View 1 (tube, rainbow, N blue to C red):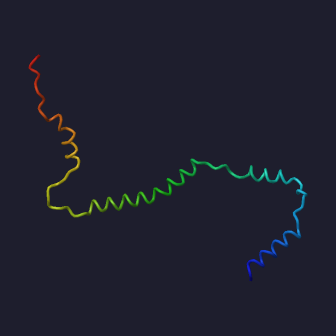
View 2 (view 1 turned 30 degrees about the horizontal axis):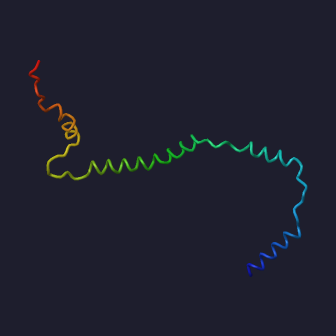
View 3 (view 1 turned 90 degrees about the vertical axis):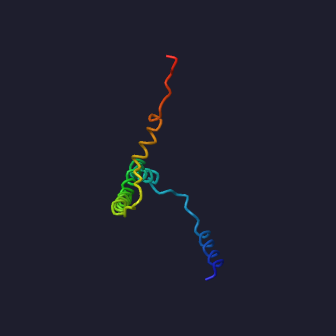
Amino acid sequence: MNLAQLERKLIAAARANPPSERVPYAFEKRILARLAAQPMLDSWELWGRALWRASAPCIAIMLLLGAWALFAPQHGGPTNDLSQQLEQTLLAAVDQEQPIDSAR
């Protein structure tokens, strides 16, 4: 069917049947009652739902990375222990000899 012809038919039908000026009885009260019946949007509930949904993928990623770290082959080179490197870096200033003040 031609869209232009269909549009003309629909507009003609709408013009032939104008809307009524009469409002149904207690229309405002019914609308306000429906609005009051709808629950309020709780932003904390939305955050809670989103975080619970995100917990399963996070746990799966954690388990995969933990298994990878546990079962990964160890290379035969020198061990790069991050805790030892961090301790050496933080205590580097303490390990240096400080000049003794001879003016005491």
